[in-house]
Length: 637
Image (cartoon, rainbow, N blue to C red; front, side, top):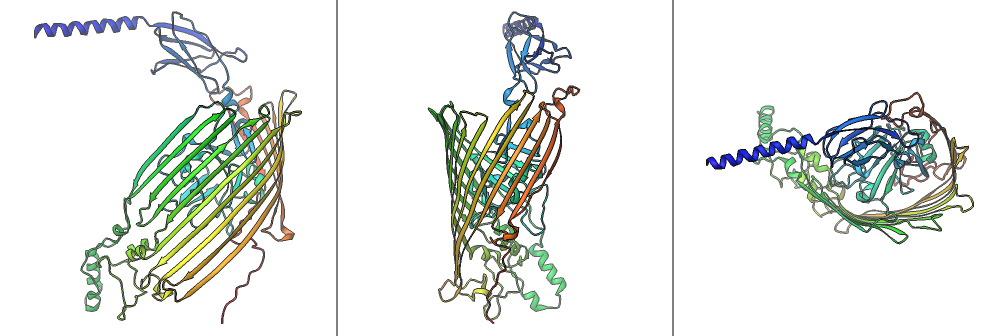
């Protein structure tokens, strides 16, 4: 035992000596950090020994001093500059020259019909990329950026699968017209309403295919979209392949469970019996109406909802052809029993370049197939108002066994006796051709054609004899079938010029034309389940057009004074001929104070003072494509 103790003490002493020797090998490293562009000293540069918290910062003269050992890696970092890593050897002086990070300085943001350097943007624009999306099983893409953008309020309509959200950008702008923002996916402006048979038009898009959300907030930024921009604009960009990128196969999957954690506070069965006994103490008939069960109706209609989401993507480049293909599957139950969404999605993106990168081609195609089972939400109110002393199969009836309509409906009957299902297929795609002129490389012409088409069919079934909607269908049940086809065709063409003037200013000018056609048709057939009664048989066809001319000029002087002008002339068939065309101008001024010589707060690379003005409009005045025309409805006397 004594020999073992001596060995342990000896080993401990050796380890202490080795640590002291290692500490003694640390030397003081000094040096100076300068800007590679002009050789000026760089203060406030952070120097950290990689893998530790130890380090230092440079002073006003760019000098630093740090203790390090041979083999340590010094990491030099500063906002807007490329990070450098240098391994310590026998040297004690390490001078570093840092170059600007071009990828940061040239970072671009998506705006209407193009992009602009982040530093040159004059309007209120905010972007959230996939790196910062909210995690989890998300069937509606807008939920990925909920709470991520200032001035953008996203309120979920409920916990149902694929539930739509109310999106408001800096509040609403109209008392009667739509307050929903315009949504543009890869250059295609989609209809706000979406296809029939889905709760949310955005739920038909695979969240895993989205690269970024960009929100145009103020009028100076949105006026380029004219008569559809009064509520702001959301630009969605999907993921693409890249030249030189190796074949990459990626799988992502997630599972989740949702359950109600709080219920509406209602009377318990015993509390309800006591209430009836107190209020109707002398009324034996009222006392006799109480049941002998104890039922928590809210717990009867809700469930633990399981959801799982799977996405597989293949990204890479074959010779000159970058590509990305993806497949996704989502299955999500709702916490309200019988609620379910099942969705298959697929997408292909090709973006090759030809003629020494003078011709760029971009092809995007995505398809979706969604099956929905919509639970009867009337059960939620029924669970709150139903007598908790009754059994789960109880129904209030008159003496002749017909429904007692003034009494609450059994919420389980509401859920189980009504089948509401739909199947929606949707195809969304576009082909974009961008040609940079050989003779004038500063000039580019771009043609974009796109299509958004959906086919919906749905069915509602209530069996014969069901008390549900008995007053309408007289016990014969209900069979309702509906179909809808919608298409949104787009063509836009624009010419863009980017150039420099005298080496001290830049100008970007763009002019374009856009044509868009919206068409929809559908039919609804409503009969009794036994086929004896025909209640409704309607069909419809409708279309509308939008023709636009637009332009923008963006001027930058000395990288700090910015001016932007836009103008759009919209012609919409949704308005009467005498009020069909409208002009939508905008102007914006910005001053990047961080670029001034007197501004010496180094960590700040952009600090803008902005002033903007713009005129925007709203053509979504209702479901009718011709709201200016009077409508007449025939009725029987």
